[in-house]
Image (cartoon, rainbow, N blue to C red; front, side, top):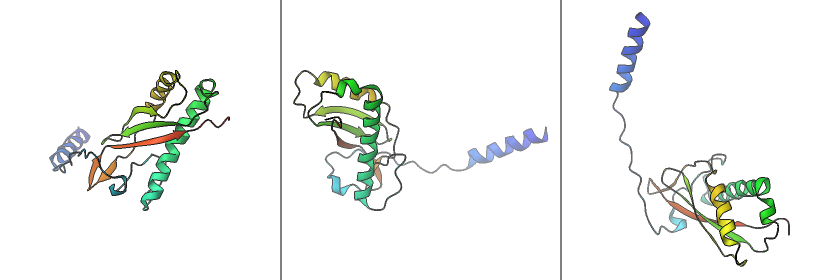
Length: 151
């Protein structure tokens, strides 16, 4: 009974503490990439202080993730790819990735197949830390090139 009273009293103390006010995410459209304070951070990227290294790590990790899933599950679909695909994504203010579209496809008729594949892959990309602009999380849109390595 003493343990129960202690736990009850402790829980009241925890809830009685004033919670800090959460900053509301701000969506800022048309932010120049060079004006972003912090780029989105992929879960295995270290905390870089240089913005160029932040972006480089993000692009490398996303590209590696996509390439891994293509090689694991969709290699036969990409065997005849002769063009570089640019896959467009958005990382929202909560760090979730949203697939947007594929751009620059010269192979007519294959765009819907590639779009379907990238939608499936995009939803598997882990949550990240969002981009920061003027101390607020913002949506961040970017493109990743996908090149067939079997050419």
